[in-house]
Length: 259
Image (cartoon, rainbow, N blue to C red):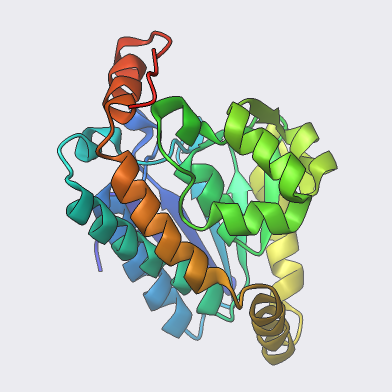
């Protein structure tokens, strides 16, 4: 299948998915999410691919959601949109093949969430992570409240989500949600080295181990996703959300009023 938003190739039993909208920093537009879902399903059924690598094109991993497409959503449509996005969450978790995020640049908002859906995260030194939802008056989505809290604990997770500050790759490693930090020029080589080690491992054992870990820690995830859809649908209707998006495009600090 041909794609317009992503690039996909398989070599040496490793599937590589590159989000390919560098002009807008690879955001999760509806089209990109649809293609990403298709690619994951295809690679999941492809016996030639035992491991999957996810990376962004050029300077960014993923800049988050497509803000332009959020401006005119009503609460019902916003909730439905989030429910559709949750198909992506389930696909990452239910696939027994390991998925490695090669974070080559900014992982912001939903891009941060997307990286956490992967089984391993290898980050370039220059990359950074930011829970930017609060900057536009939205709530964290794609299950990140669940995943980030599980990894770094509630107080650290709330610090990142409530303050919206950037986290460097080295800070992310110390917090525990990045597995390795490597020189920018070595990112793909090191990611492929890890993927190759997984390829040479017993795939049935690897897949079942991933399934058990996910089952053990994610039993309450569906409750969180239902609440997330409801909460984000409400936030999409607030004046603060519209102000946050307008301020983002105007490159100024937003003025929130709690409305």
